[in-house]
Length: 93
Image 1 (cartoon, helix red, strand yellow):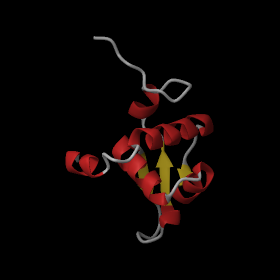
Image 2 (cartoon, rainbow, N blue to C red):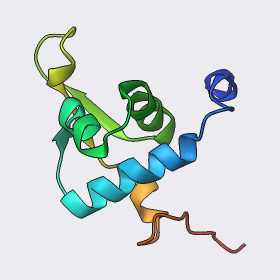
Image 3 (cartoon, rainbow, N blue to C red):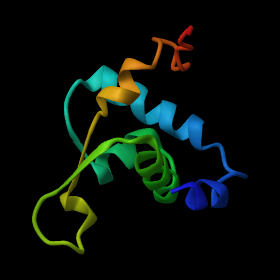
Image 4 (tube, rainbow, N blue to C red):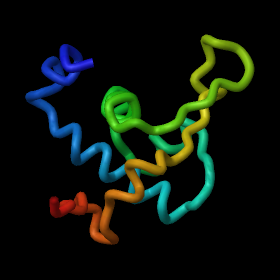
């Protein structure tokens, strides 16, 4: 997984993850991948990378090759570490 993170190191993956997490927190429901991409107005590749590297739960429904059948649910880990303004919560040790 770290190899893939390195490939995306020049991109702003945390920003994409925050945008996805904030939307899912406000919706409090699942959403299709295509609809999520449309409402966020982000390129599909940014949505995919944000989802895959952000630990979100994805569910395949129906045929494998149709992205309309991919549904996104919020990750409890991701949303529990987010503040209302989209910033990650820093945990003290």
